[in-house]
Length: 104
Image 1 (spheres, helix red, strand yellow):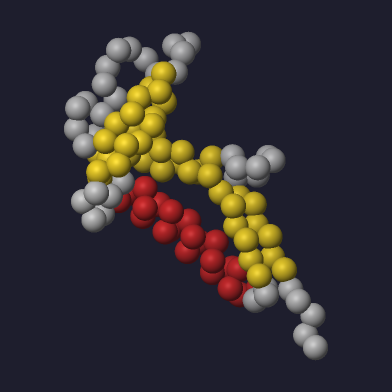
Image 2 (cartoon, rainbow, N blue to C red):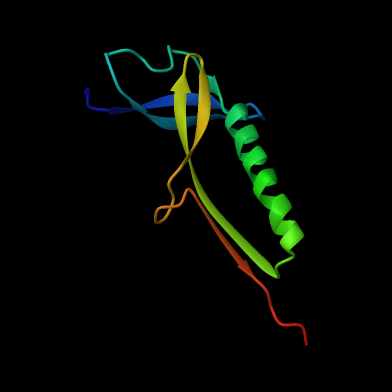
């Protein structure tokens, strides 16, 4: 198994802003981004989809307060950045807390 190394690559936000993203690179001595600026919009779409999937059942439960914690890792696949849901705290990939206040 080849040890991972961290590379910093340029990535573009939807508004055109360029940010630097650190990615773990395994394997040979190859530039993981191939010298190109990768687009973060697919990562944003993945987060939006995840939020929508979690928000619908939370809305149906009608809590007074809801907190959702999750982690996203960004992986480089040929020519694009991909979001991966990863472990946050404890053993769960999603940590959801719902609270209901008594009605007075």
